[in-house]
Image (cartoon, rainbow, N blue to C red):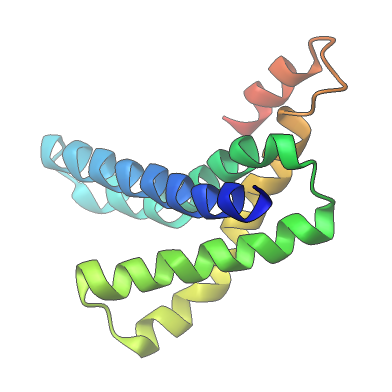
Length: 133
């Protein structure tokens, strides 16, 4: 059950990241200055979204911080393999971007862990949502 949930996390998180990429692409087609629209979400929003969705799927597992960061690494590897297969990215480019991707996914996982915590249902989660945005 735990392995299936972790595998589901990898797929769901990276699917959410892919959806964010398509959203960025659609927005870039609307604007005149495409550079500003594409760079910010691609570097920060997409990995953070992957981590946030991963944390939401991991809720029933109640992983500790170290376990969550370790499984973030597996989610990063799946994302890099997806970029290699889907976009034909080079290995050097993937190695260069992998630390930034991992840190972005970790930031999303840590924010999601505190945001989706079951024990704190006193309204604090809504304040965290405003900070994350």
